[in-house]
Amino acid sequence: MRLRKQLLTRNDCYQAKRVIRPQGVMVHSTGANNPKVSRYVPGDEILGFNANGNHWDRPGLDKCVHAFIGVFADGGIGTVQTLPWNARGWHAGTGSNGSANNTHISFEICEDSLTDPTYFRKTYQEAVELTAYLCRKYQLNPLADGAVLCHAEGHQRGIASDHHDVLHWWPAFHRSMDDFRADVARTLQGEEGEVDLTEAQVRQLLQEELAKREAERARESAPDWAKELYDQAVAQGITDGSRPMAAATRLEAALMVRAALDRLKP
Image (tube, rainbow, N blue to C red; front, top):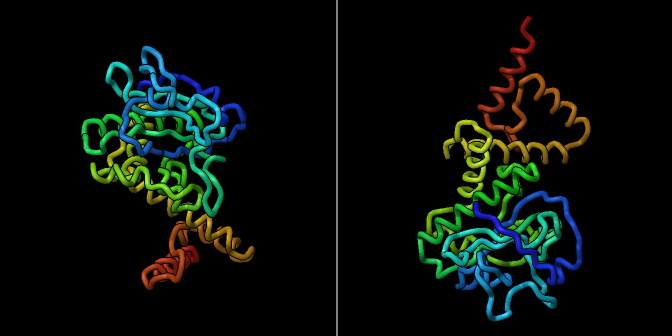
């Protein structure tokens, strides 16, 4: 990752000086064919300069993100941080369930023509490394439900306005947000000095994490007497807590009965 800081201190969002406790990262893309980060920041000799005065470091704008990924002055790809990481950004808008502005760090990937595989690959890798950096900094699990989202996924969850980024771009290069989360998790695993996880292993961890979250939600919605029995069943190994989540199949019922009978053996 190539990280440089140029905070947008004149932007109204920065001036509001509201802060959040980061609970996730939201990925955006700019929706305009201009891959240079200097389109969005005043710039310097490293970032390149904005000669048109249409950058985001000015009052009167109703938008601001924490960073941009795109082309620097030398033609290389990098990240420019534009808000403190714990500032409340103006990036997600509002959905039916609230706003990711209150929970998520945001960054924009500067779009090009959306047809260049080299530009896609380089910006995608920079986004992976930036997200891994933020997950490490704020102790976020990229595989946890809702921790790493794109704007389109945020809208699906009711915490962002109706935008399609980045699902209008990445699938053309055979990358999904699940792939992205898996790559972030692999990057974190490698940084910790351990053996990198395979894609299949990361996907298995993702499935296990989602099953765990679903089980937690089911337990919370159950009456108190059911919670007690549920906890006993998990403690005794009758169920792993993730299945069954609705009506049990014959096999699941048989396995739970078998496990319970085994517990009765002297």
